[in-house]
Image (tube, rainbow, N blue to C red):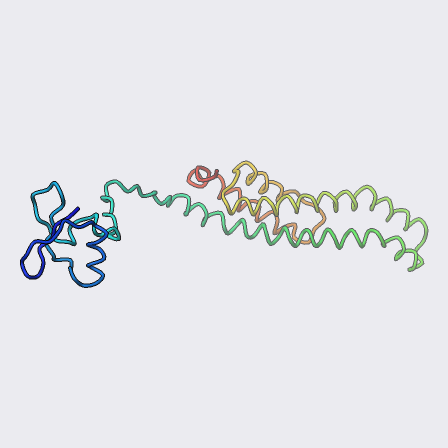
Length: 205
């Protein structure tokens, strides 16, 4: 319960907090109206009584109690360092996958094409043997290596698994039947050089 001092200087009350808030809405009291809570001896302004102003926002916590997460500048620098070789490997992997798929179609219909050209049977047999023992295995291996390197390049950009990143760079050095053999080797060497840097290696998860 509360007492107030009206605009005429007279004391009114006791009244409830709800009644006082209603009077505030009606304009019968304002934030400067003097208020005395039951059991207290000190008069306060209406606006200073927390119970009468439930919409007053809570005080902000001191800055010393707020914990700020540090910005990992080393990890940011590592992302920038691996981005170049990772994107290079990504592009080459896509091209290698396309090359492998095209090669598979070619190997499937190569015999029919050679027969249509009217080449000697011995020549066709040599071509078939080369396809079975070299072209087909190289194309299949190249396809799976390209898929693995594609996944590895994506994980490299996210700084996930340093070992997988190293393996991806090494796989780029393996010569297979694709259109970007020398570019693959260059990308693999570039990636290995970057990945061996201590600040980059320590930033991987």
